[in-house]
Picture 1 (cartoon, rainbow over the protein chains, first blue to last red):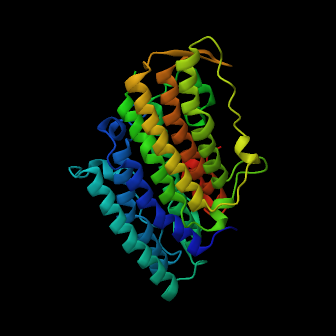
Picture 2: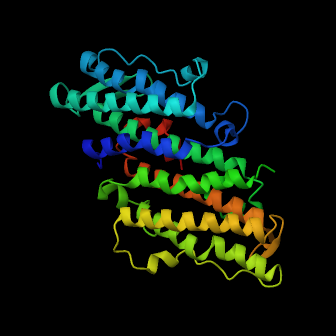
Picture 3: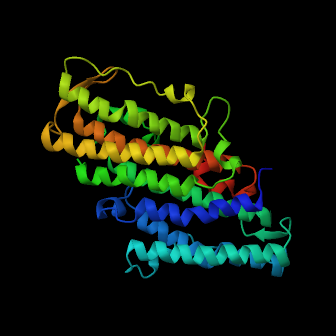
Length: 174
Length: 174
């Protein structure tokens, strides 16, 4: 096991600032490109991260504390963000993500200090028994998966532009 | 073709700051983990990006201007950084990358303004004829490929910690 709460929190803390620098001020061409019909653009990935802060990670940790393994988590709708209001700018969305994330990290620390053991278990609707520390690990890796996704979406836009170098660029490997 | 010089430069400009926020202050566990023997850790990826600023992108553009298709580029050693001095901290390396990148973007703009057409061609030792704009596109996508690599390396560290969620995390898909 490599999990360590403080190190997991390091990742959770860096992601909003990383994305702020990655995406703020990029042209619409970069923000709105995607990998084909039905795939997300970078803005939609940020919407999804915001949605997770609101309805997934902390609510599930609280569910574990309240219900234990008795009742499975309510399922998380991974597409919910696609139906929501999207009129704010990318900068506003990134600021919202930063605020929500900061609040959630504070909440996470408080839960672990006062109410919850990292070994505490709950029931995932598809996987069965899961541990609090697995959920927190997943939260951090979920950030990383979406950072790779954004970079991959952007790279795809230049697939033909790179000419023969496509062969050397791992991110364009299918 | 999606390539546009200003948009490519947007990516080149954001990468150093993105990596600064991604990596500064992370624990050694995150900075030194890797995906197995012979693979790079995040610090080595930054070393490789620094090496590219020194010996790959701008030197090759200048080579195109000077030699055209007459003489192929000298090969770029993708492992050169592994044999160099590595005593500086990650923060120092990131600062060096930022400085080199800023200088190189200024040089790129000057070359395109004064001396070089984006359609100008050179000879790659393995690929044959390549265009200046393909090289610049590749420079930008190369940043993106290494951002995905760093996120993937870090995610790998928690492969077993995420428990059954491994199934939902694209970054851990092999």
